[in-house]
Image (tube, rainbow over all chains, first blue to last red; front, side):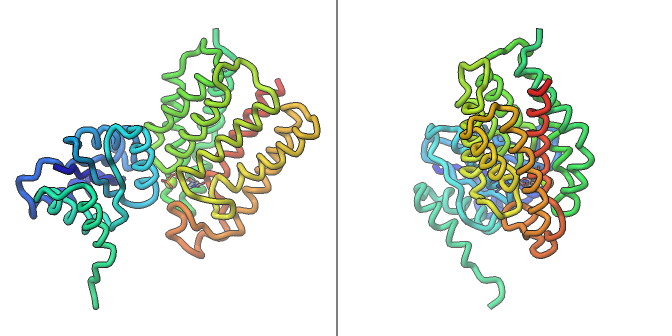
Length: 129
Length: 206
Ligand SMILES: Nc1ncnc2c1ncn2[C@@H]1O[C@H](COP(=O)(O)OP(=O)(O)O)[C@@H](O)[C@H]1O
Ligand SMILES: [Mg+2]
């Protein structure tokens, strides 16, 4: 099964998004968060992100959702540090909507490319039409 | 016994820590008020972790970069982390640095920052200090100047770069969320990069 990692500056954001996403897929076991620094400070840490990706991986790849600025840079760095040992990619998608779709898609057993594609479709979700 | 490169890194850390509040205040204007705190936290960890007797400049820089990467916390963590690690690759096995070496190290550091952060010159980032600094450095070095002389030119150009960041709008990093409001303030990362170059120059002059 494809894994999903939520990267945020804030542990509270990551926890909230996880709760929200898992409501839609209660039995999904592949979700991990990497948020804040080791001591709980707001920030992002490439090493923690790398560990979360490794932990989420069952061999089918890991989709990463990141919040603003250094969330993306640190996640990118984490993926580089894995040197191809895990198939991982940042989905170019809003973190909340993207996480919900990624978790649902992964939980029904979709493959890596499909989870990425469905997750990235959330970029075009309209809220007010 | 502490090696020269260890002393140099410790000195950079001291400069960063001395300017912690200044850098944080700059980041308060156009960011989230943490650049000084981030960098000081990183260099405190660097000081704790670095082997004082390591003489291999490349190995020392690599270790510095890896430590910054996991302790700084902001965008500057992976950016400076990559910069030090890439510079370290050029300096691998070296215990002394020539002007040509330093030019190549600075170039590799800049390329690393650009690969990570996808920014170019003129987006109000640390690159607006580092790229002009590298240009000025190479001009002197190619004309036969020694390391310290070339670094003098680099520092002057970096300072001009910092001034230039006051006049432009941020299009990368957190400050880009501020749009026009980022104009009028100097970039914190360009400032810390300039302080770093000045500290290296001053250290080499002693
Ligand atoms: N994409 C980028 N490329 C180059 N430098 C960047 C980029 N994003 C941010 N920076 C630099 O990082 C500095 C901010 O660092 P810091 O405050 O530590 O991180 P954060 O912005 O995550 O809070 C900025 O002043 C800028 O110079
Ligand atoms: Mg900041």
